[in-house]
Image (cartoon, rainbow, N blue to C red):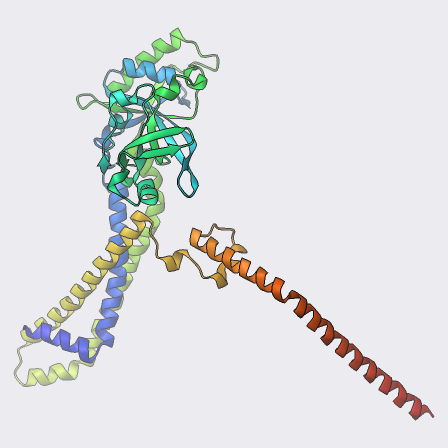
Length: 431
């Protein structure tokens, strides 16, 4: 075993204060830095996890003054039929629905997409498949579900593929699971075909009713965003001339990058914590440097004796370096393990139960606080504790009231006796 490594292990066993302080300081700083850098890499620096995300754009109607408007479904249907420079254009509209389970009913948000919307968005399921064109026709009862819903409702089981999704709007067969990294639109829990709904919806059939929706376009690999926008703008001018809009004609088209839309909103809240953890790393390095200097100063006598006995200076310095590298390596291993755990918690949202379910003794304080919603386990604990207290009060209420009345009567008699004695004493003194 190298002399430096042996000295490091001996120091860790015989004098643990210094090595534990160094390892803990470095591990805390490295855990924060690695976690935040990984989040920044996944959210800001890397492209979106969809296929060809750099060619994915959100499409709006616009005018010469820069005013934007959501296009109606008939307009997007005409774009889909004759959109040059695009691999595809998709229309997505959301609505709230209810998922009926065996034990409870929960609210979900459903994204209804025009034919081919999954390929336009570049969705790649982690289980199952994307439903195909014949299944998107009228009467096609198929659906995609998000990874979050899959794990929460079905426990991540493989037999969820092909199972029946019982929505209030109708039952559908699950064909695939969209990973959490590709959940787009970000508010969607379930994705279903739009064609059956559009065939009977008066709102979607109205060309001049611009309902809340999203329109996405995937620019062809052989084209550019400017060329595709110019071609779509010419088509939009033709449609504006053929169908004058009573609410105002917008004859232009604007493309906004989906990556800028997603990353632009996320980069601002991540920048401040990222700077904070880098500052924390600088403080940790300064603290470790001070601890190392104190260690060297306290060991000056030892090094002087070893030098007098003939130990070369190079061996002394190399021993210090190996010792420092050993402590840094241990801190790095601990930091990687803690970072992996934190990232898994952040990704899945499975926080420890001790953080999610306060004890029954603290439930009342939590309910009287900021009004934040408790976890289901906490709500059950609070209800059980409240029912127990009510039953206890009902059983002992009469006895407690009787005991309280007796105590009150005794106190009243004692006060009367004292006041009577004082009166008699006063009368005797006057006499």
